[in-house]
Length: 267
Image 1: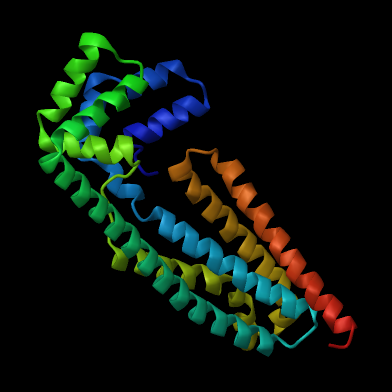
Image 2: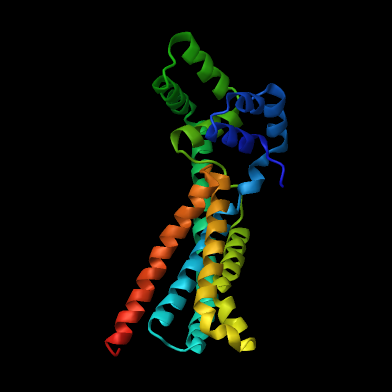
């Protein structure tokens, strides 16, 4: 079992409403150790992995279900399935690369603008800091003390403007790594629904139950992906896994129904 970090311990304590464990996660030493280790790295690319994996397995299983519903040969499932997995994986990776790159460029551009304004119109930026903390309920000497403290350090001042005024934080991942994480996750998860049909090529006895085996493999994988998502969201793993399973199952059911109806219509 992986060792939990402070945030994960706090999340578990909250989910169980365990005050004693929550206090342990909020001791001075625990907080200091957590800040020093900077555990943000762990979940940096988890969103890309979960997004790629969930999309990969859902869309592939939808193809499998649709073809199965239309009563087409397994060879069609393999042809369409593998073609879609690799084509969509590339498409998603490129899309993720461009969107991440655009986000990073936007953040950098806004950071440069805020820095320029701090250097050229400091009085306006000081007033913005004042108004930000005034809205938070500070006033009088306390407000002016906060304003003076923040604006006395240019980096803190800039970081505060980025977060409090624009709601932006410095990008902590690269477009290339994000796209690779999405691509690999999409391929691995996307192939899962096809494994049973590949095995049937070498073990003919499995052919009759290939779709059932595919359902089982896909359901287990979907539950795992949903549970993995809870690492970042903090949602209960069982609930998160079942939620992913239910939503994806609905998509597969629709695909199967469409294939079945079109087949019976002679299309």
